[in-house]
Image 1 (cartoon, rainbow, N blue to C red):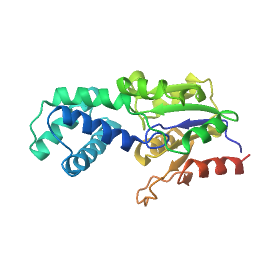
Image 2: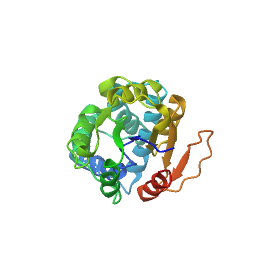
Image 3: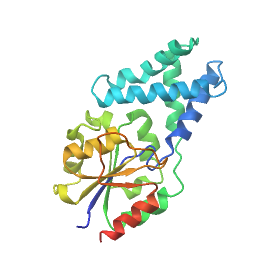
Image 4: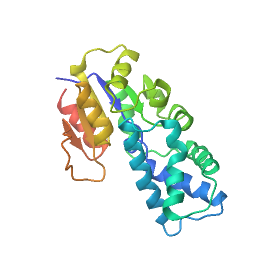
Length: 231
């Protein structure tokens, strides 16, 4: 069966979030009189940030608390001296200005937009994603851009998927495909909502979880080929 609605995750699926993250962290720490110190701060922040977003997915923390808490944990973990409220705010400022696409993103999305209904679904913070996504050159290709903080639900909560389908007046789950890089957010959410899923595994990671996507690809070129094979 041919898919009709494609729901895309944004960061680390279409956008190179790690590049944006590094740039934003480097700039906000520089303002605070710190450096990345041989990547120790960066790698520690990435680990903390990943863990705290997992807490959000599990409903253990709000996005409002998340903004500052990750820097509070970084400060405590590495015994650093800075004002976490100020650094957290400046990090979001710099992150909102850092929007980098993977090399295959625009070409593939442009082609898919002529054949499918596309929606962008992000768990990001409104302050950041509004600027990065809605002002991106990618925005015109999507019928809607849904940001979790704006709607009150975050992936993998099935309610954000239900809301997504309602927003674009599409109610047949059988021809919907969720496409994203996160097993615990994009793929688990899609599975629990009852739609097919495609894991964009750009890093060729081993999936040693019980979360099994319908498909796995390693870039968007493979995704395009997969979709063509189902036409």
